[in-house]
Image 1 (cartoon, rainbow, N blue to C red):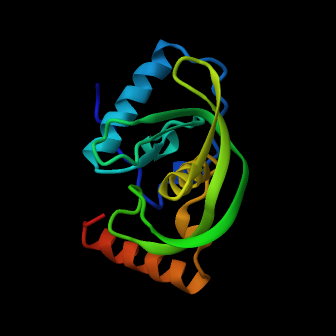
Image 2: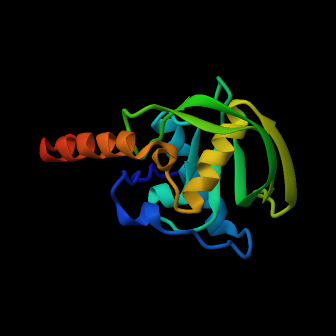
Length: 168
């Protein structure tokens, strides 16, 4: 397995929509393993393919304490949800930034699993929020897009400052 480079906010690939994966093959399975290793190495709970520079509709998620319950979602799509709530959210592509974001507290999503089988998941709480966050990445959205413009501009200004100091 290989630890992949996480793309940071400002890199153009994070603003590109991903492509459907037509079939689950050995290359995809290897890539999923590399993504999972990368996510765990950075102490994340979710990681989308676009965050490691690959424009395919794939994400890995594990909200368990022991990192032993990974979910591999190929071509995920949220089909319904309810009960919007605010919760603190962060992102591996925006290290060090955490903000309150309003998300659905319960979702139903469809996806293909690592064996190529169509699945449906009913999620609530943190898992529901992580699924939405990762699907957003696949659709070229980043969690700060949900913030008021003044807050987003403040974060972007801080990122520019960090870049100048070679801290980004």
